[in-house]
Amino acid sequence: MKSIEVIVPRVLVKKHYPHPEFYGESIVELLNGMVTDVYTNEKGHLFTITSENNLIDYLRSNQLEEQEVLISKNDVLVRSIRWTDVNLLNQWFNRFTNYSYNEQGLDIESIEVFVSHSITKFSHLFMIVVEENEVGTFGFSVSDNKSIITLEVYEKRLIDDNQIDVLITLMIDYIQLHYNVAIYQSIIFCDDVYTKKILERNQFHLLNEEYEFQVSFEDVKQGCLYNKDVEQ
Image (tube, rainbow, N blue to C red; front, side, top):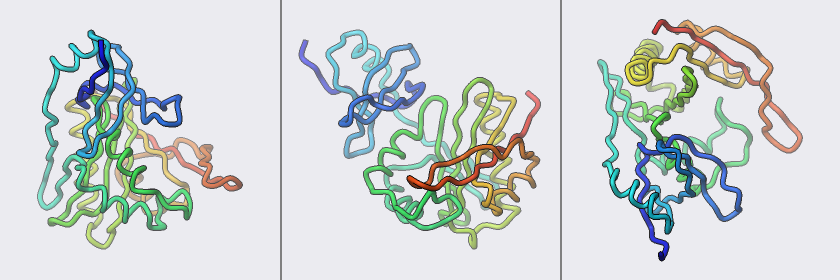
């Protein structure tokens, strides 16, 4: 059978893995256990090129429209990341901030792949919006009764401590509702005092300071692991 292009709904993706070939984008494991390589088209949709009948039938029979998640309280809103957010993320990611690995910026193609892969059945990336202003991102992934969360606030002047605490509560409530995990963890640079204060204020506790991030060929930065246990 001739190979055809088929859209891969993100809700069917269990996990992304690195592609073994330099020209590839990603290998995904689907919820039914099948594995295939995927690419991102110009509209931000995942697709695969395959001749496998079982895979084609599975994907075609589960062509579910991706639903945007919207959660709000008071003047804090979180929404699913959008393909149209790529340019804003490009501006943010290429600043030198608490979250920068080095001074070498990311290209737009890398950010497009990041956005494309950020939403699966067990992970999500949100845009944080306060009073109609985008201020940063919140992401999570879930595995083995544990959620790894990432909080990156780029427009700090537009969000205060109370609004950040509302955000953290909203997101933990959302993850608990859909995944019922027992442990929340976040790994940050140890010199990121801003995020440290947020985590500690929201009952995250320092677990260890033994992580190292390679930030250049010669340099590493120390990472701190924060942990929060919740009742299920």
